[in-house]
Length: 362
View 1 (tube, helix red, strand yellow):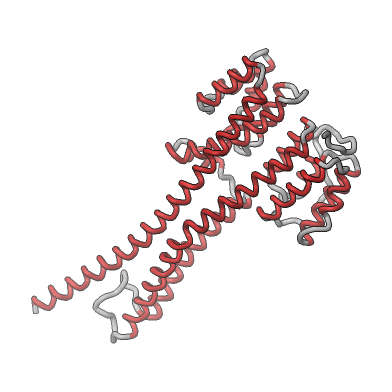
View 2 (cartoon, rainbow, N blue to C red; view 1 turned 135 degrees about the vertical axis):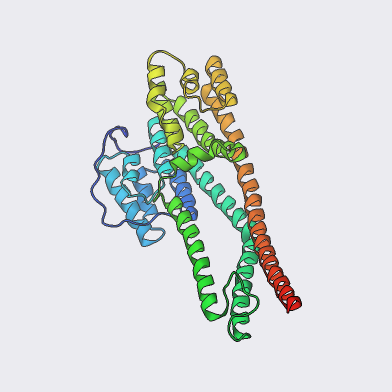
């Protein structure tokens, strides 16, 4: 069933939205999944898009309601839905905005929202699996840190002056304060880095490009990007979009300059009468199996259907990748705990041996 919506400008056109009065927040993963499902279900049922947003504006936090109201008002003024979402000052993720544009250009907006709802729901499940996988190792790490801090405090309390055994020269209240300050600074730096990456405060493209060259991690990140790209390409090529525009929209859904930097060159290749397969091949960053699937789909005249099948394969690989990474993260935390304990025991043993040597020489 086709989506009902008011006339909209071409999403590719520049749009200068009014400045928002509220910013600084981002929709949570659970709320985002529910939001996409609600919008997609409403559009699939044939409800007018403005009515759908009007209904959604009655749910969620005050920030969420205000953002949805802003989208509804922009759409009512004839602004494209994708541009209205992009005017939310980062409240909605960039991937959602890119995929909405694909949906608008292909006439499959309700399918896009439903699929995105499933996608974000799966991400939520993977995040829960990851947190559960590292929960016990993290408790062990916290316990080891507290035990060491308690040891530093106790050896200073039971000794007059400098005790015979210390933890890297730290003992007593002053040593415990220094120890916990260092641990807090390290933990705070790690937490700030993670939050900054999640909220897009730092440019991770150089790191991403480096990780893409690593054997296992690079393949996993590639599967994540290609699962998005192939699905978007399936939607875009099953429409009246030009090949250049379809490729551009599909590649943009990867949300990485590692792939997006080649968009102009790929469009030029297609503009010279070359195939989509040749456009992807010229970049040198796509795997052979993906290129073979694109070539087969073009030759058979069923590129959209082929990409839809391939997208499911990459999606399954993505799930496997995150499960493996959960196990790896848990193992690394466990090894960190073991390393701390072994280091502490070794350090104390060496100090004890030194005491015995001094005693025998007296």
